[in-house]
Image 1 (cartoon, rainbow, N blue to C red):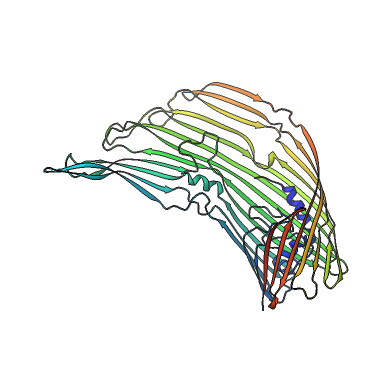
Image 2: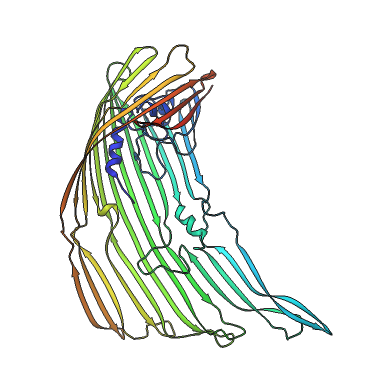
Length: 579
């Protein structure tokens, strides 16, 4: 799993003026660079003011600030394209206030349609003689059946459910997101890598000149799951496509103690990638005889990887003076755990099918196995951030906020954020007619890796100046929302090369006894060599949005997203009070 834990934690600090928004966010929050908020933020975030609204309401639109496959705080809430799935939220006011938020999105299969199982028949013709008349009559000589071995119904899928409520002085919630990425699997399914093909062959048992009788002769069955039947993966290789599933669970919490406002978010993101595959080929005995030689084949390949990201985020707010002024601080800690597993088992068995209705096993088969071993690789990151929100309202029609923010983050990444392979063992063993080892010579190769893997340490201080402006001119039919977020960042990355030594042991066996052992080692180039890079950067994002009020409290918020040179997109969000 590609990682940027440091960036994730820094992003949390960048959102600190509003204590780090989670799903969903309001357009007003997004358009003003996280300096202003409204009813949507108040009712769908775990914050100290949750549940204080007197009226229930609905909202809808494109407002999902966290991608389904991204860990918590993977994107700045005020720096998004709002291009997530359509979302719907409901807030119920009362003594036990509750908010519910949900999204559902999926992409259709890009490379194919969902096909039902089907069969194709093939016919031959036999001449039937009746007196002086000869009639050609068809009889079934082959039926080919197709069935999916790993049905895929969506190219991509994501579903989200969040619930928040207030229990006494505490606000607590639960967030669940499930996402699946089947894009690559969709492509390989379209070209026959996920199906079973059964060819049933028949023969005509009637004598010449009479009506044909189609009788079963033999069948061949080829079953493939995530592999190319015409080019099976070699030992050590993966299946044709990788399927990725992500489950993310978060628990937000908020509470006020005196003048202090606390927010806590615990988040676990579990990503599972599967590139496993399977294959089998079998041929039955020929009832009519004359089958010759055939080889049955089975392959079972298991290739999985997992990445678990655990994030703990805490934010503190201290209101100062007038409404909107406050100090804020935020701390975040991230732990990434990366694992993997791999095994490969391929079996070939030759048979003689020349005798009618008989399938005789022959010598000359083989079994190849390949197993990798792994250790869990750990990534650790943390960040601290803080600043001050200054609020100004020179008139009733204009409100301005600016939040100078300083953050610093660190991260360590092991083995590039992937599981650490400690070795592998592979062998190909010759078999006799019974499928057992035939006592001839074969070798086993065992490879082990020892020493420290490659590591990366990153230090990233950053200064941001998010600012927002809300203009509500008297008599206008709409209000203006403006925001900008300039940031200066210095990234220092120290990379340490791997010092892992490769030891290869080749063992030769004859009649199950060891006849020779060869051991060799290979040392890495520049083991432990450290290099450091410094990369300063400046970024600036600005927004222009409008808010259009209607009768009954209904409001539409819209936004334009832009960079320094041009506008990029346009989105609308609806707020609908229920009175």
